[in-house]
Amino acid sequence: MGKWKNVMLTAAFTVTALVPTAAFAAEEGETLETKQLKARTATVQSYEVPQVMKRFTYSSDLSFDYPDAVRGIYVTGPSAGGARFDSLVKLVDDTDLNAMVIDIKDDHGNITYKPDKKSPYYDIAQDYIDDPQKMLKELEKHKIYPIARIVVFKDTLLAEKKPELSFRNPDGSVWKNGRGEAFVSPFQHEVWEYNVELAKEAAMMGFQEIQFDYVRFPEGFESKDDVLQYDHGDYADKDTDNVQKRVHAVTDFVTYAKEQLANYDVETSVDIFGYSATLEEAPGIGQNFSKISSNVDVISSMIYPSHWTSYFGIDVPNDHPYKLTVEYAKVENEVLGKLENAPESRPWIQDFEAPWVSSKQYGKQEVEDQIRALNENGIDEFLIWNAGNSYTEGVDYTP
Image (cartoon, rainbow, N blue to C red; front, side, top):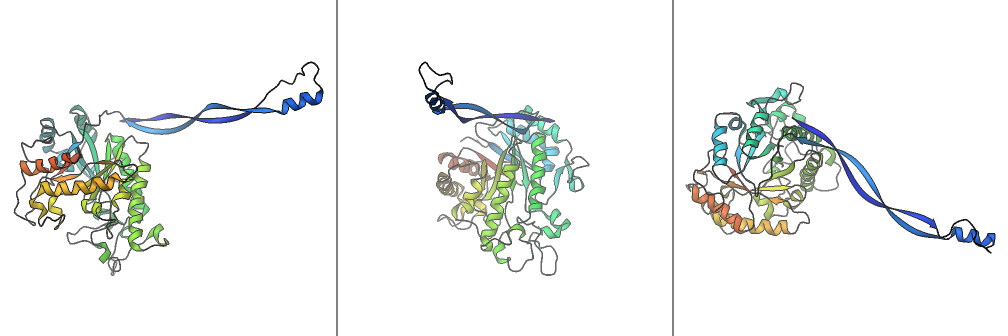
């Protein structure tokens, strides 16, 4: 399945030595006092001495090359483990697509494969992907870059199993949003560990990148803050307001995740709301675009035109995918351009209709318009979202 490697890291450091300028044997005619004075007179010499440090890294037996630019599609657990998988592989093979983002932990909190019986995730796992290793070997064969998606803080299963890790109503019941979804708290380190340990399992399977989604508090949390019951954990005593506590918690999780995965030979990425790039920080959900971006290898803004209200001077962004994407790209480029260590930009774009917004149909032209808008602004990587994994045919993914 893979192997741990003991990697030797060699660095150099300088040792300063005092070297006498004369031997202790007295030259002819020298007095003892002169000889002793000479012996005590020294020059400084520097030597480069190798310093060896050890650390363990995990490397899968599978081999994948990072594409020229990642161009990927979203794949659910049932699609990855079912009959649709072959057709999705064919879609990638027949086009300029080259990557798949596959659910390992989905939006409800389900683990999408059956791990070992000793795994803490065994009881809540679904057998959607009956053989993850076989699936990854197939992706390796077709040179498809595999990304493991892990939904973090939206987790109804964990919230119901451990209400103390969630947000609760005044009567003690687990709070759920209008869609019946529960969240667990970014303030809880137990939740951090729960998700990051799963990410390590995915890395050991052979996934080349871990993508964390729902790295945030529930939407509109600022209006629920004073009503819901929850534990601030280690952030209780921070001398700052609740907005900054949320920002600290979300950013700290991202930092923790990247540090924990450092020895697993994987990239770390985070999905984030596109509008977060247009604000100093999103106060309710705790997302600070710059701070999160500074702690990941890849940042994936969800810039679906349907998800924007009137923005950038566009009344109905869903009806203008090219213009919306251009305006967003300009803002993101400016924000990332100010960072010392900017991540790779790989936005999520839209390949679905949004009848709750407008009657605009999305097809070949609309998908290509979004890609073209990104490319024209120097962003060559992208991911395409369709919740049902039904992607438009005939799209030129390098227009």
